Image (cartoon, rainbow, N blue to C red; front, side, top):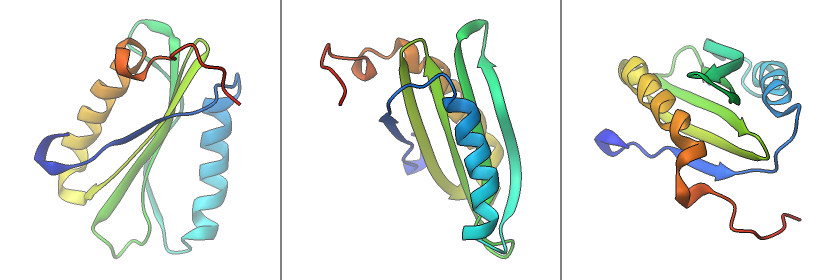
Length: 122
């Protein structure tokens, strides 16, 4: 990514409930793991553009209200494929980075390097 930021994207096992389950689990667990956390932005389920077969969920949070680091984390599903993504950034770069992350995840279903190779997932 730009400015030396590293967006971690991983293939994950697809599930029909994945975007919803990711969001529900994050909302339930973040306050327990980080008692002084601050949720900055969330999306339980959204579509990526007009591609209604691509769904995503996302949560943006600070582990502590006193920290300047923000985590942007989420999942994307497209038909029988799914990816998780994470990036940690300084708060001052949040808006620009969030927009860039949305652009990148919108292209995940079309990125040939992230497509299934025909191998069975175990």
